[in-house]
Image (cartoon, rainbow, N blue to C red; front, side):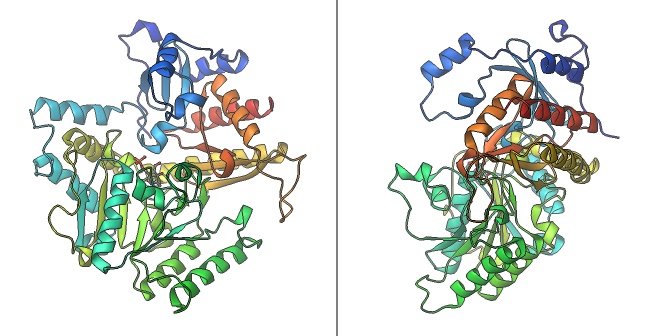
Length: 473
Ligand code: PLP
């Protein structure tokens, strides 16, 4: 059914023609020794102290195909980080490579600021066809930076200018990027500490994180209390919170620990924000384009945002970000949000090819099916390992919160998060040929963001590696 691209280039004898999964079976029996390579040593000597992933994923990569990457030592890995969720079609998918080649062959100017081209026009039309028709009918698009954070910056300016208001609402645990404006919206205080701590103008709201309920309630109670709190906050003339320019949310908090918002919570949030005339900004930078089992995560709840922030998968693995919003918010003036690199033609071509392929191959449905299989298997693991506190997520955006079953409990009686076990698990997976990321409070959630083209056999291989790795804890 699915055209999973072969890993091996037939002409390249060095990687052979062997089935990648049988190569990975060997890594299970004889885990990789990941001690330093000269490239890694040079990287740590030259690159900034702010570098992140190489610290826990010490790999020098030389090749990628589908869900696999190979490092310079010839070791094969399943990539369940996939560019932090960017690579919807995996590495070097033929339709993406072909779109980039075609664009190069056409001698299109590769950089056009925000001038239009046939490639840009096709990209916009393709994207708008994927949006809910009512939203698309009067929507406007702004090309941004090209990072997710720059699109968030644009969204904030857009709603502030449109409403004439200054403040914003965001959620505890939210992640929206690393520029100063985006950091304002972030729940995690760590990255903000060196910049003077919390920044004024943003009011944080409790997210429906049922496993660690901010209210000490069960799932239904947490959701209801969160909504009641927001409703009251917006209605109370003496609540000390000015009417905000917008409310920003993810519908599955990704970096915050893979925390899905219940659909009914999302519907009620839409109702509350609409009633209070507060633009609802949905950040689908990570959830966008099939990952959660629908093209956009907001479709699960049957709602529409006022402002939609998109990046990562939208560029088909190349940098691209946009904000799509209701026409009535289009009150800003020329240059209100600019930036040199808004016209990346290769990214638009790769993005169009990716979006079309997602649709043609029904990869959102495929992600739902593969995600359900993965989720079921992780729940099976949880039954065997008491160190897995919760398995959660949607589609192919899944997480496993690691806990210390023998340690102290929180006020709800749940074992506390176990960040050091999560780090050991991540390492054990890597040694067995699986790249995964950590996130969530204290970095205790193992995150899985595989390319959407993953097959059943590959899902089973991922679970086998995690299962074997769990045994080492
Ligand atoms: N919003 C969400 C939900 C994200 O997950 C991220 C990045 O992971 C961003 C925004 C920021 O995107 P970028 O890292 O491209 O600036």
